[in-house]
Length: 142
Image (cartoon, rainbow, N blue to C red; front, side):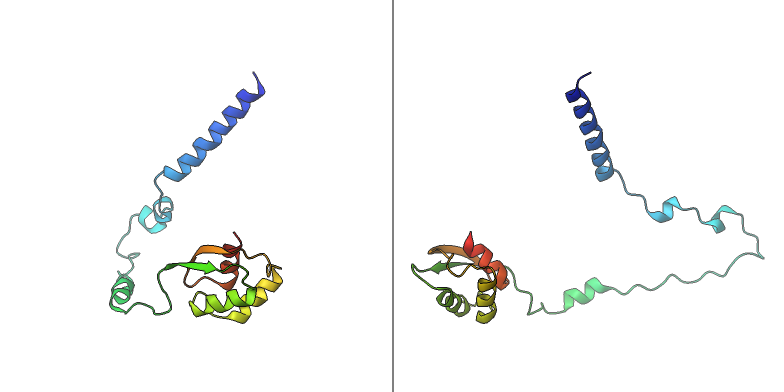
């Protein structure tokens, strides 16, 4: 038998094991573990008093009735244009004016740290509101 046969067989076994784990029905730990009190018959002297089930707070109703969080904003894509010959400081000013970054100094500090001050190219870029300064730099350098 050849090496490729064994490689294919091993790959198939690994793949089938992974698919079995992914698509097999999940058992709850309570289904697998046997409760010792239910395994033995109870007589009146060993019977414990029934306790009410614990009360779970209903969070879904509370979340639906609350107004949306003002800090969480949906991703809004905007076109951002870097003009030809723009410096990193000018780009930071434009980004701040369009509210694509929150802090010009942090943007410039990341730019210096990444040594990307002169690597920005003129063009139009898709940016989302709420990105970090570092992520904005990565997207502008693509």
